[in-house]
Image 1 (tube, rainbow, N blue to C red):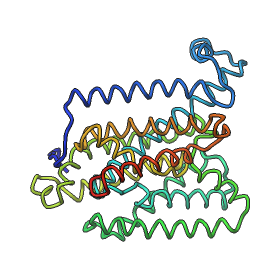
Image 2: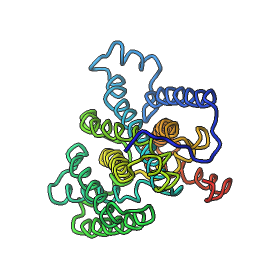
Image 3: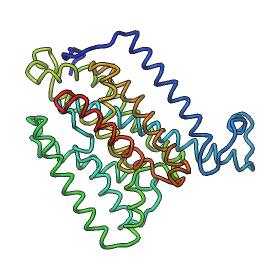
Length: 343
């Protein structure tokens, strides 16, 4: 894998325009984060938010809610949205498929299978306890997809077909095991909706090294994706070691998705629609698209978690459900506006 880059035919906004969009996304994330800390089942004042961080009172219930409940949820949503957005951009770039989703690699299904095993066999109910097995399940599923897809000779079409087959297999096995235990079904049913209820700093700290490692692989991977999107033969002509590049990018996708799924459950649509929104405002240069995907993904996830806590939705709607409610119409709009071939 080398640092050679190449561009793909598309419209590229100027650096100034990209900078303005990037600044707007950061500002939007800051504003949404402030609202996420304030609003919930029990809204708090702006002064309480300030004092919770500058003059924390351990016996003040509002300070406890802000620092021990809402802040971990906010950080988890930012990390999950950024990771899924970047993983989606990498997945679509590597497979050259505009409708590719990180779940196509079987990561979600493998992680779900790991969670079912944790609950059924080991009796675990705390997400912090089954993080490792869920992440391992995602890695096993991705490895199976890679091997069934042809290993070093894999191509995007074969990988997608292998991913669909492995996902169907693991989901079928998970549902079969769920029939054995009602308790397992109850815990899994809550987890599979996707969300950040009950997330703690300990879970975030456990997964942070994995997310950081995934980002460390994703950033250099974006440098060669521009060439890979032109085709493998062209990429080789530009000096890219295609097999190594695809392996590192695939590993980044697995780690980012696996860590997110084990923390928040399988969340749909974020990895699918975010890259398209990032491409519209930042162009198809993967170096820029990766950063925009991270920012937009974080915005979408924080917004979904915040909306789910409003009284309009009962105050306890899971973020994964809200992300689907937001992402579904956005995807329909993108398809109707541009057509699948232009996504």
